[in-house]
Image 1: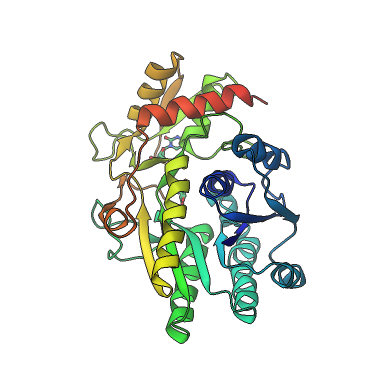
Image 2: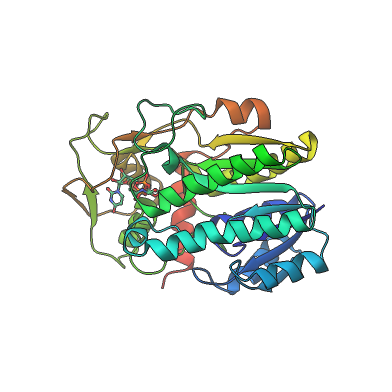
Length: 335
Ligand code: UD1
């Protein structure tokens, strides 16, 4: 089975390539390196002892996509290629909508032309906006996103629903990620954001390595167990395995539109993360409490029952594993 992985050198794309190769899939990867590094390809090779076919190119380049599908008979696409920085998306909405939405439209056009009708799409729990209740199920309302990044995911979900409505021979799986953290245990691949990280886990790692001085905890007055924000952190390797399960589902069902939450179902607070990181890794995290970050919600965690029932997906890694692997990656890749 030949699968095309877009954004194959990114954080989630690279971990998924490892799981796909280890599961025997033939992987064709593409990336434009807008937010990733070429060495990731070698590291995927080192981890799996296998080679994947790779092309450097951009999904906005329709001719590039056409030549790819002409050269390879691709059975399924896993689409990871997107911009993902929430703050930046507010500054650059045109770039975000172009990169995150137009690229998918290009891909779908070319897929349809070549009769490739299986797609796994990277969506996000951000599509639930400010959830009315937790844990969140797939049937809960979506909408109310507060930034172009989140809205771009919502738009693509709608495009995929409309496409399936028009052509029910497609098999589409939308995966709504909660908060992926951690890294492959080898420390060869992981999260390597450009500039100062906006997300909690990479920020903690950089405070631990003394690259950054102090973590700002955005609010300790939420109605949560300790006042700090609660999220559903999921080990990136578990998340990657979720994609293999999604692919198996599409292979089995042949057609349909499926939506799954990928999370552990357990919420951890900012303090849980800090204290677990300190305990497991024996390092001190300097932090101070500051005001809430605008747009943040108090609690967000999944009900993972649907993915468990329909995909046979459940998470193997604990919060301890997540912080240990994040720190291992940071130490090995200290800039
Ligand atoms: C953020 C995005 C979300 C995106 C997700 C990707 C926002 C508002 N939301 O989610 O759209 O899909 O990343 O993983 O940016 N925190 C601190 N100090 C920090 C950083 C974060 O206290 O320096 C807190 C936050 O207030 C939150 C928790 O840590 O309670 C997690 O934050 P973060 O890692 O940014 O993820 P989300 O806000 O859940």
